[in-house]
Image 1 (cartoon, each protein chain N blue to C red):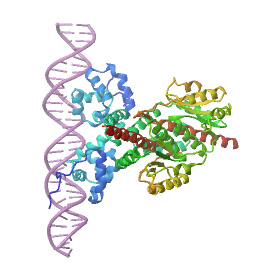
Image 2 (spheres, rainbow over the protein chains, first blue to last red):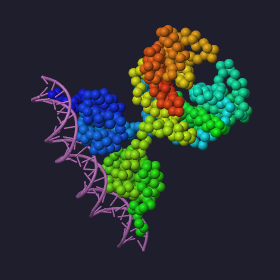
Image 3 (tube, protein in one colour):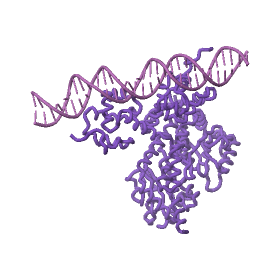
Image 4 (spheres, rainbow over the protein chains, first blue to last red):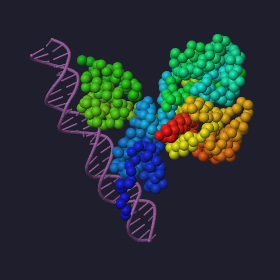
Length: 288
Length: 288
DNA sequence: TATGGATTGGAATTATTATTTCATATTCCC
DNA sequence: GGGAATATGAAATAATAATTCCAATCCATA
């Protein structure tokens, strides 16, 4: 019999991800009942965090002592210390993304490698998504969709940083068979393209500070032709807000000098698919 | 003296928001020590969720019995049932986005309005971000960045759904003053553009199932010229994975038939900014 | 400033929960 | 198939934590 139990080189997992990896790693070499607990733990981490040894054991279909053996097998000295890891995970996850973002920025500045940069962009995106789901006004969304659903052609207007959103909108509208026109012209004919729009059409315009002058200029021109505009921008002082029939304020978090686009993307997709649905409903009604 | 204590009309708060409101409402009419607990509870909800009566009491600077009185004051029959509310809050917040996404899809299908569509896209984006932070391989990230940092010109290759990502990469590389070339040509000269690439350059190629044939064809051609490729795609069966020196598997959640781009975007930005940093470091070293 | 009621602190008590122990069952190897 | 090593179940035990109780204190009011 070799010296088993908590030997020196066996590191106790301190965070959930390490724990998860350890469990997955040993999964096959674990005894049946212990493996049963392991599977349950990974499937129901919340239960482990909050339950008592007895209640968890019952849910997992084992004895409380098996739970403790499972914990010891992993190097913890009891169920309680294993549970700490599951609780810490909830705390972490729940700690506001803003705080995490702060920490990540500091980390990246300190030169903590490229993973930190990646984490920063993920955090920025998550923060932006959280913000927009809190602040988006349902009524505006309805208004914008109604307005766009009535349009003969939807013009899509955005440059520079916002341009990727415009291309995705154009792609999605195309897939939904909704007539649309991305305002970009290699031949420098934007002004002429804009001139084709009529009040029966509509525009989705996207621009964030510092507002691309071309976007603003084209938005002004097009609004003067009486074409309704749905704008996505970042503040009520935005020049776009003045020309717009409906406008959305989207605050994207930034990291390393680049703003996230995730909130804008989500909104853009909701508008696009919303228009698609509205049109389907309308044409169904017309037939009936 | 009126009938105090747990009277009939005094509803016990079952969820955190109601509880919060109740506390805020009564804040002024509470005895000093109880108010002290109330303030602590709202400031440190996580501690209440996880701590023991004794530990929380110590942190809040009161006796354990005061905690229980606080709970009873609010209509609970003891500290334990008050604690349940704080725990439930963590569970809720943390309930996997996957489940929420399921629920939202059902809701949207049932025609629950456009807000449901929007929520669905937000949830899809969040799910994708969670997934990628779990699965991204740090070593691949390092490899890809080193490879791209050495390139004279970075070619960016993506069509259709992935095209927005390509435009954002091109924008960001441009802002960082890194020479790059987006492979898109209104004049149909893509093949010629591709032919200019040499082994001293590098490619970022992005394609998801169903893989745009043009992307695959161009990736093949360019890899045959000996140009190293960093690929972002969705499975190891992807044709892109074959041509790539380094490739990333990104699983984007979809909603209403459109996949999120948020994870891909985050990865793309990390690559871009990572390359920028690496180059700055390298040029600093050369000077020293 | 005296008095009654409300509030608080701290220890005693009770309840709950984790852990240990030991008998029994299972598995693996010779 | 026999026997050792390992795994499991169930109850006993130890530890921990919630609750209660009572004396001391505070505070408003007459």
